[in-house]
Image (cartoon, rainbow, N blue to C red; front, top):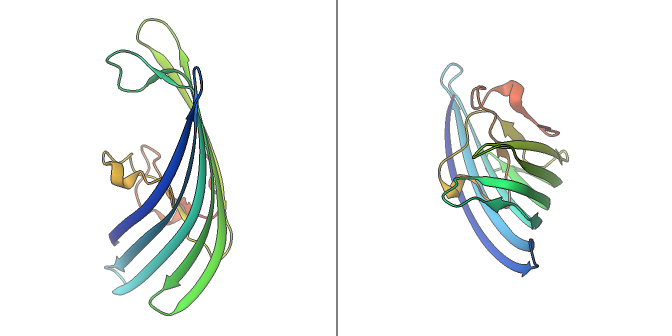
Length: 170
């Protein structure tokens, strides 16, 4: 399976800062195009997804001096989105999507931190699916805020049919 992707977004956000935390509201649109080519069956499928979304992120995670990730605190993100999906330049469908992503960081001893994560989402029939698997991308462009449908699960292959669906949970 060969997968080719194009992704672009236009976002606007507002952040309110409090003593030890912040709340960020982000709204935007995302334009995503994916082409899947199956070498064995010699078939090709093109999917074009336009997403309109709103995201709220609460963050009180504190990063240690010279740290690469938060040392303690939490980040809670809630997304509400609306997809317009066009398959093979023909059939169109619409669907709503919601996502809740909770990350908790607990300081242990010395430089050690226990990181916990809970993720759940639901895409209605007609919306684009979620794809679990592979490892996290190292580029900011693959970690988009609106239309976050690829969720990394280390140790699992990317684009495995068993890891695609409309109601993921981690």
